[in-house]
Structure formats: structure tokens, C-alpha cells
Image (cartoon, rainbow, N blue to C red):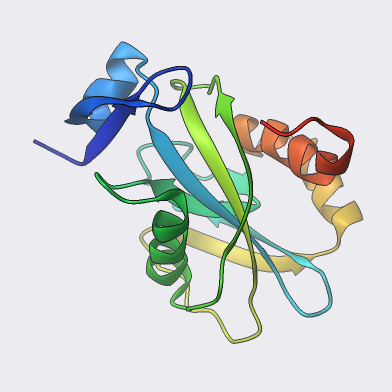
Length: 167
């Protein structure tokens, strides 16, 4: 069996434990924790996913993250992913979550923020390239077809979160 995740319902209530690949195949919602990293100047970290990633290979994203492990909160998963993918420890702050219908399968996306004020050491198995960009540059990058489609919706929700009802 591969990576185990909690299968959840449309209200994010746990239904059971399943293999993540099985959740994706059957379009069963599960939990994913992501982090939007900003530097002290307010710039966003953008990265290109490694070419051999199973999901969205070689595409650009403004979030790092991954599936929450069984029994792990969104915040715990976000902190773990930040350390695994970027080699840093920084406080993560929960921003919001929503049921992302997803290009590959549905999942609850818990989006967090972190200010990263130290050098990062991206995991080369996950991240092929990275840069710090302004909000305008990020918006322009998100219009390109090489940007992860699910991240475009997350970016819109993130940048306009004060104008949306909480979910």
C-alpha cells in the first residue's frame, strides 16, 4: 500500500483510511495542506515542480504542500511539508480551506501562510526551480497554461479572501 490518507466527505468529516492513489482513482475527497510562502518584502515564492512528479510534473505553483497524513491536522501537515519541501521551519498560519474539485480528483485544500526569512533548500525531487516574485508577477504567471490549474483557483481565493464568505 502507498501513502495513506483520510477519506473525507463533502463536509470534511473522516470516513476512513485509504490509499491516496485509490482516493484519486475513485474521486474520493481527502485532505491536502498547502503553504503560501512570502518573504519579509511580501514577495511570493513560486516554483516549478520536478519533471518526474506524479501530479502536475514540470508545472508552476505558488503553494508548497501535500496530503495530510492519517491523524494529522492541516496545520501539522503544513509545517511538515514546509520542512520537507523547502528545508525550513517557520510558523504556519491557517488562512482558509475549501473543497477543491481538482483537475485530478476532489480534495479539501487547507491553505496556510508562512513568512520565510531564511535561505531555503528545496527538495530537488519536488522542486526544480524557484524564485521570489511580486503579486503582479505572480498574477501574470498564473495566466500561463504551465501554471497548475488547481493553483489558479486557490490564488484567486487567496488574493480575494477578504471579499469572500469563509468556508
